[in-house]
Image 1: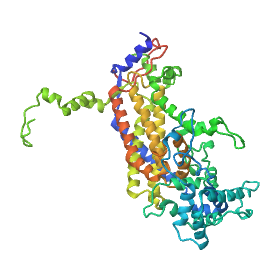
Image 2 (image 1 turned 60 degrees about the vertical axis):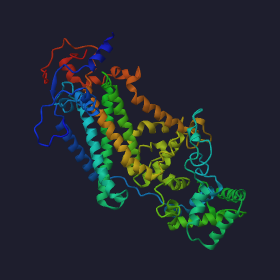
Image 3 (image 1 turned 120 degrees about the vertical axis):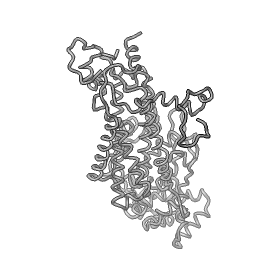
Image 4 (image 1 turned 90 degrees about the vertical axis):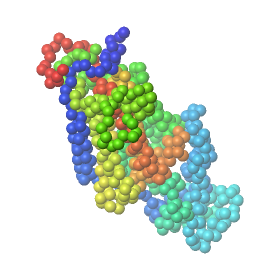
Length: 333
Length: 233
């Protein structure tokens, strides 16, 4: 039998060596008092983060051009949310080799970007005669006709981009866009008035829902939410997973998960013109890595080699220095 | 004990259980639990001499942080999820909750690292480590849902970003981070209970197996003069 196994068996036996008084109830009470004083003291000194939630009203007033362009994109089906795939629409989703759980789970939270983000909110409110006529024309049109109109305007809006990438819908070339300009303008005005915020959540019902999926998806399609996150240093490639707003700590215990989003293997450079499969499927890869790390930590005692690291790097000499100095290996082997 | 006895009536001293009593689930549970955990094991007043380092404080500090979280969280739950946006008192209680989770997680992480360097899974203590790790990950989930129900910009952004990874691994519809109602229910009804149960399980295992003894030194300094020990045998 090896010496290591012997010491392990000794560790399993009831302790037969020297003992000391240890008042665990007193220790607990002191710990509770210290924690209470610290948390109350920190709350008094620093408060807590509470950056106001963004609204469609804010988007529609401070970035109306972007809101208009995104609305056209929702009708054309060119935004991220419109073509996201499962669980919102049919599609493949992300994959790691043959693993395609995103596709396998199917459409569980159906989202029709044009209908849910634009048409239904417009129909939920009294509209001008122009918007009402546009709604009627849209609904009377065939799906192909709708796509033709919306895609034509989407292309025309994208063509107005200036050197900084900002879009200027007021400079759109004339063309056959059907009712799409009136719908987009109507929703932009509805957003600016503040009525879209309630309409997106209630979807016409009194209690509405505590489910913000559609509102979050729509808001994320524009630059408004993204720019605000960049300003707060919350992007994934700037350790945003563990950062908080206004320099407060967020979830620093997630550093080992956030780490992977800093690696170019998964995160393309800002000016990259092409991306790799790893980068395209980074969220899937990284979440699997997070899962594997979690399993390794949970089952660490059963993994040969890894479980010996504490023997190789003798931090324990510091932790138990007093015992070693006084008793050496007494009662340990 | 006979069922016809009245309260306050003197009874005979307890007799050893017969076969029927011994098979009773109640008796088996009582015998098993209190056989494993006699009072002096549940609330010991002595610990091995090696339990003498600041690192041992962080386990109990984690439990104290959890209690602060539950208390401040209960106050928040009675006032509703928008209270802290509109009331200075609400904001203060939310701040206590916020800093409690920071202290709780800090204590737990230090405790975890301490136990790692002690190789605290030795001596049939693997399950103690496993439950500790499970407490860590279930705490991450609880804190994560807490950040999602702040109903401010941070929760908007976390929901927008986190959905992609969760969808990619196929759990998005059932753990929908953009569904504030679902996240709120999980945060206050399920996940704290999960953490609490695992922590109790973990502490019972620690009490059962005791604190792991030091890793034997490769070179025993046995010939060195021994200082006057503070511990008693």
